[in-house]
View 1 (tube, one colour):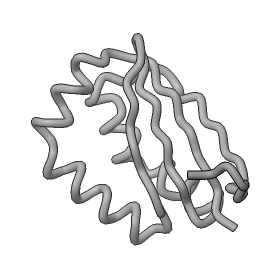
View 2 (view 1 turned 135 degrees about the horizontal axis):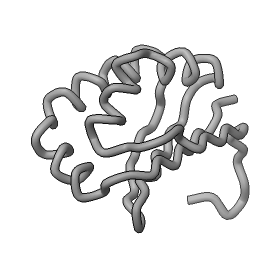
View 3 (view 1 turned 180 degrees about the vertical axis):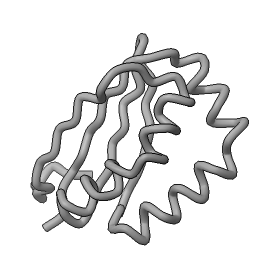
Length: 99
């Protein structure tokens, strides 16, 4: 059974949006590496002063190993993130109302 991972990162959301465009190639490369490492799904959402990452991974360990890489921490900082992300991991379950 896979896991759903959310990471809430506070920071400069204008810089984040700008970096999505300016470093698109880097992000595409990173996405491929994440899939190879066990990522199933990845999406961003932007709120007031924070970015929310919503991922699905095969196992918590796969996520933790990938996320702990120094280059991941560097790109978070370069994209405007400040402070430690608030990470939540839960087992993905199916439900009758899922869509």
